[in-house]
Image (cartoon, helix red, strand yellow):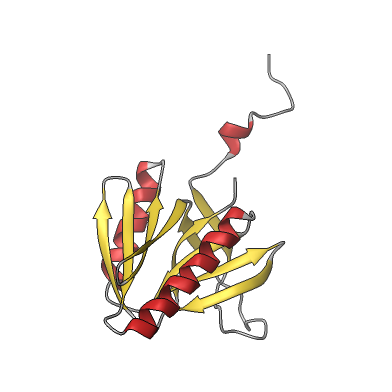
Length: 155
């Protein structure tokens, strides 16, 4: 017998679809675009010379999409945008560091480092901000070259 309600687990998609994303844009685009991003679990950790952002996917398709985006955009500037109630709360572009992307079995690990002590400290403080936003339930889009590569919707 069919019912009118759906199980939450069956409606959760591994890919997030939304309107065009541009963190620096201040007005509405003339023609709205759409972007499909893999839904991931994002964790952040400080390392000796900067920080690591781990993006992990539960779904094979989302993982493949994430890894393809990382391969295509690797070496570019890493950044992130945190949204609270649909509004941009925090937007960081880690331009003072070098980014690299390592593919893992369930996603990727983006490392942003700097040999300069002050830049390293700045990177770590920005990543602490990301970690705090995630802990408070914000939605986060991780970017490479200002192109979103994954989205973490707070659980």
